[in-house]
Amino acid sequence: MVVSLGIVDPNSNETWLIEATPDFPKQMEILTGNNFDKLKGIFLTHAHIGHYTGLIHLGREVMDTKSVPVYSMPKMTKYLKSNGPWSQLVKLENIKIKQMKNNRTVKLNDRLSVTPFIVPHRDEYSETVGYKIDGPNLSLIYIPDIDKWEKWDENILDIVKKNDYALLDGSFFNNAELPHRDMSEIPHPFLIESMTKFESLSTNDKTKIHFIHLNHTNPALIDNSNETIQLKTNGFQVASLKQVFLLSD
Ligand SMILES: [Zn+2]
Ligand SMILES: [Zn+2]
Image (cartoon, rainbow, N blue to C red; front, side, top):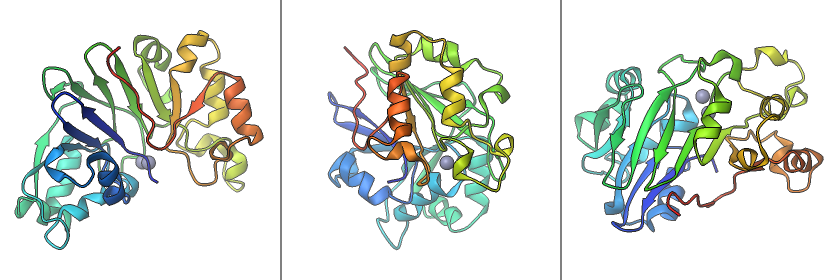
């Protein structure tokens, strides 16, 4: 399935979802057992098809939801409000847009908060954000799409050190997946580039890194491929379906 991340509070039974992917119905079933009352909000990252088109399921023809909070950045909000069919979701109040600001924390409840931060990416229709999720005493970084690490004015190594989990863009392993294109022109950090970037981290910091958003061509999706073994040998992991990251110890 296309990558998304659920946030679950076992104390209150509330859930939130980061991304509304084309697999939204299946992901909602996994997350809430189709009890949509548990869904307290959806956080969007950007306007590329794998990340927001699942919103279509909230509309009149399908779930016909009532005012589901959708957290969205300013350009993303403008895009949704001014283009059908998304504008209809707003007009009919299937969704209620909550506009976020860069680096401004959204408090979900006493135990959980979410903070968006802008990252460089191909921004045709919207800006792109990653998220920091703070739990009772642990935190997680979620960055599904980003241009090369060097194009970001933040230091990803420091971010990994300061947080407990880092779910990072692992779209492509290397340019062998894209034979006719120049590696420097692909707007993602290749896994071979990320492994070099993160080489200096301690063993403990490396285990925080779980790669996500793998393209179907990525050999690291295959158990026991040479590339998967190479990743693991270097201390990194690929996130798996239904993997749970605890935010309290
Ligand atoms: Zn994208
Ligand atoms: Zn993407």
